[in-house]
Length: 212
Ligand code: CDP
Image (cartoon, rainbow, N blue to C red; front, top):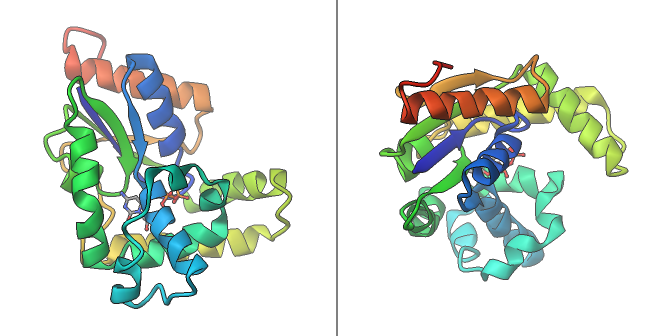
């Protein structure tokens, strides 16, 4: 079974994808980490993320680099959304993701274009969303926990800028696949959101069960 989970920053897609993978005993790939790894290499080598050739030259990284905690910082996330707009960067990372999706037994992948580009044939597609303000509050809290002091306004502006870049780019923009189930987590606890996601998977794969 392939489960595709897409959605914007801080929508809860990563948490939901991890929980689904655990629930169904499937391997999970956070595809955002791949773009973050490219961004980290660009920053490390002092390259220009807006230059496609520079970003492409940073695409052949080793798997172990995906475990670097620096990749998860906001600094790297911002640059990830710049390098991810380059068609040649997306092409360079395509096979790796498709191979992961098609492995025997299935997989859960989360990102922006899983249901539309990476696994259009996924058994279940979820598009996870939440209002920009709620996502900014979640991210702000997370940053504060990690000792990063910044204002909520700045986090909200960053979230809006990232949404704009991710949904306006011409190559594989972030959008809900027509056959994806929408899951709005704005007013749901993590547990409630995960339960809702499991109910959606059940209703798609086992139609006799209670519809989500
Ligand atoms: O969840 P958050 O937005 O903080 O980060 P992420 O999912 O790790 O993604 C970082 C950036 O990578 C996003 O802003 C997107 O620009 C890009 N990305 C993408 O273009 N396609 C994907 N499948 C996953 C991430």
